[in-house]
Image (cartoon, rainbow over all chains, first blue to last red):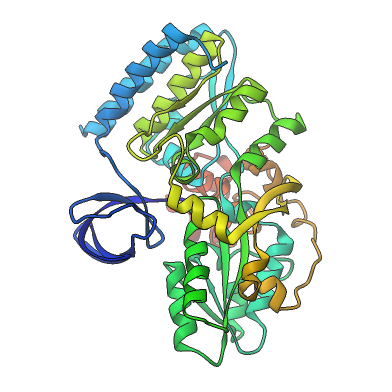
Length: 79
Length: 375
């Protein structure tokens, strides 16, 4: 139920927007996003944009993994 | 070969390299229905080292909804002049005696909605009928309910109410750990709950229980990466909170979503399937919005009936049993004829096991079985 999918905003009108999802145009609510703009990628959950995405490339996960491993080796655990 | 398969292979290879150094079996728990399903669908489960186990915890909101609450939703649906709106996951969940699907077949007006604002529009279009939104879900879903109530207030609707069954994930994890009934070595934390709550909500698990929490997304490689980090952190001996999903998850969460939740809801006690009554583990509608609270507008049954006889959904939800340990699993309880909620919800642990895991009972000679399980 907590599934959310990336979608791109193609129209924005106040709290309402049209998002493009795999070629489908969906009317969504963007009131939970600060200053939504056409072209933004958002996480769409049950008709609401719940977050603006900063990037969707899975390769980023790998880069983050390397960084975290290095940081953990240097810093140790959480106090 | 697709890039995702290659990425999964890379992470799994590294996990196989480090896991033997554990010297024992490590048990990590995910608490998100989408993680449950994608760990199967991506093939990840079948690729894990023998000594790295992935347990499913109380992460499916339909599954953790108590039998009594399901009865209350069905009761509301069968009241005269009521239109009950719900997400599709709830339709086939069985209460003490029936389901919403049964009620609809008997004439109840039950509408499956995509967005909570659909329910508001149904109320606008049916001013002489009472529209009730049965709102189930964790923190990911709660802001949408809050926005619907605020919209109903703005429109001055007097025929729209919400039966709020929203739960919070942290009290469930704490109750699970406090019970001492499940031994876990760390948590794969749900990315889309964390989108709303912020990553920091899980830090208390790290501090209080000395267990690592790794927030991650929903692709197979992302879940695998979380298991790799949990294994490495276990080896390092120092628990940490880590965020593998920073594209969407910030430390503080979504401030607008949190503000909407805080404005409309307040913490309340709630009964969870498998965990019982947990203090301040759910969100109830504040008195200021009582006119939109179905619990105040309607007389609702307060009973909490026992779970179906023989059904071990409560133990499955809390990681104390796997679906194949249930006597009903894949025999009397199937997706076509579910007994417990873990088989009803598409994100339920039993439904995922039935669909993806090899199980000898699925090959049992039975005409019914042959219809349901493609060979």
